[in-house]
Length: 116
Picture (cartoon, rainbow, N blue to C red):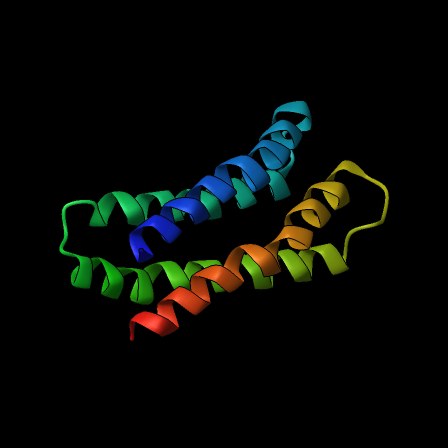
């Protein structure tokens, strides 16, 4: 079940976050969008690293590596958003992602707690 939820999180990142930031970076080489894509890419790299591990080892890898990346991504997004003017494409990309964050990660946190 946890593997399925992580797959959903990565799909969420691909569908929810990545297109917004990808389009922004493509349109004007936005350093903020590039940084967001790099951070999201770290999650994919961690999943690739753990693809052949046992469930228990993958869970540990995610706890040790993915969760801190997710936490840092959220913290970074909120800090950068606070310094970004309303109405622009950067603000819209961050708002879009941050509005969807609570629902997306509440499921993951519940599942992680249930499995411990």
